[in-house]
Every structure is written in structure tokens, then in C-alpha cells.
Length: 121
Image (cartoon, rainbow, N blue to C red; front, side, top):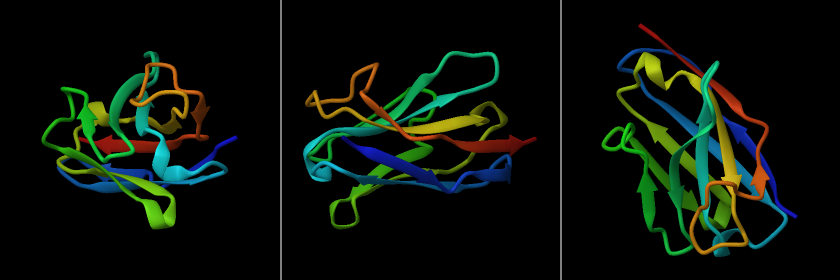
């Protein structure tokens, strides 16, 4: 079992920054891929970013160059630094873990409860 708890969401103006955190517990954190997804009102959940056990990263095209995913194995925490935020980044952001795979899949087995990010224009 893996438990995920997100924090760090909030309201920010366009062009601003936020850092999301996801604390993991349960299984050995450093061995499996972690990532972030988001869901905007009226839209399907979409992939944002992921990081593997070896710290290889992958991003959605819409956030490349603006968002950075990282992790701290000692703290069992993964982060999403979001810079130059845009109104279209407004969504509920979910942390995810995919222990059954070497890289993040489209339907990871574990999810956090979500944290709201709202970007005003």
C-alpha cells in the first residue's frame, strides 16, 4: 500500500509560482515512479509530469519549460515547482504513484486526495 498526501495548492496571479508537495508513505519511496496529474472543471484528468526511481523526468508539452518535478528520497516527498503560471493551469492537481511499472503509466495505482490550484488572469 502507498499513501499520498498533497499540499501547496492555492490562488495565484498569472505569471506567479507555486510549489506542490506530495508526501508518500507505505512502500519504499525511491523505487517506483511518481508523478502529477491534473483535472480542470469539465475536462478529463491529464498527465502533467513524472519522475522515475533514477530521477528521469517527463513532462506534458503544455508545461515544459515552466514546471519542474523533483524528489527527495530522504523525505519521501515529490515536488512540482510551477512557474509562469497561466489561467489554463487552473485545476485540481493529483499526486500519483505507480509501483507496478518502471515508468509512470496512464492509470497509476495510487492517488492522493488532490489540491486545488487557481490562477487568476
